[in-house]
Length: 376
Length: 76
Image (spheres, rainbow over the protein chains, first blue to last red):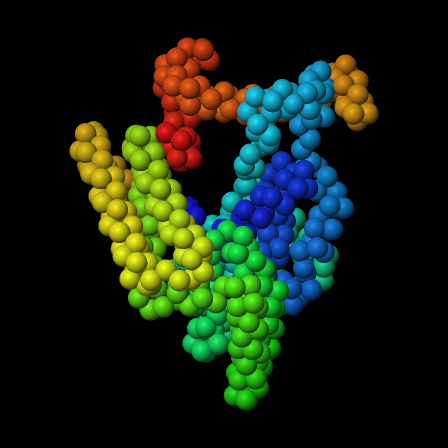
């Protein structure tokens, strides 16, 4: 169900999960979705909630002190103690064998029915806006529609009006679209595409620079422009956009200071960008095959081979970036491009072999003779 | 642990809320231990049939529960 979710929207769901766990709750409710949206720190929803003065900290505080929150508390250690089991002792024994952190009760918390419905509503919001993806803005619009659950209670407590929430979100969405064509934004987008290629510690560093320097400036600019709206003078709009341009320059300066500029120049050269994009598409195809084979009708072996293939390709790609990084951005461009093309070929071949398996298993399945007739 | 001692005392009160919560937590613990042990057995070369026998369930049941998960974790 999450295929159409943007990376940021997926991160919101992960954050909602972590926040629910952090609060010691036993499921993910609308309040955790709201908290995830505010804590995400980059997307449209974050911009809107930050502006309407509903930041993650404030939501978290309300949640921790609300009575409804207490009812959701899940404390397995106390519950087990009631039947004479010392969870800490079990943990010590298990971790002695399987390693630290091996025992995790409630690995993935379930969504509450209302939270699930909210995710569906987000999909409807996307359709209504003519978008083919589900982003944080659609999740926030869905949350704004809610009348039940804890999210509306928390929003009301923070003095956020539902209509205002909806209108602000729509305004930011519209202007974010208009601004995307600005050169400063194109530069920002190009930086954002390069960051995932950075080796691990530097990626974290680069993300921090972006969220400290660039995203606040962008949030401010989008907001100012969306408030100026159609009545704003072109000069005022241009001035707001210019602040994003200087923030991007500032971030590039800091990245260069950290020794990233040679590396970034290389991964952003047109030929390398083309090869990277092609590889990304190929890996997305493999991701699609995982979705296809993760249907119980297909064997786990097929699913396993699709997953292993994708993981292996991702590892090879990481290794190439690591090599580029270690060379100080000095790997010859043709070596880089050839390396990427080799990975594309390997991934394509692997995808074909998984597809072959899919075809084989499909042909051996007993499909109902007239599947459409029964649904009529 | 004072908390735990208090709750342990509650067990004798036959309060369904306490008892049911304990059953819930036992379920979580049981599932997690099964996950760890099945992974460890597979990694040591056990067949699904051997694992199923040890758990006293059918091979299909254990395969259905764990094979797909392990495949998604790229462990199979």
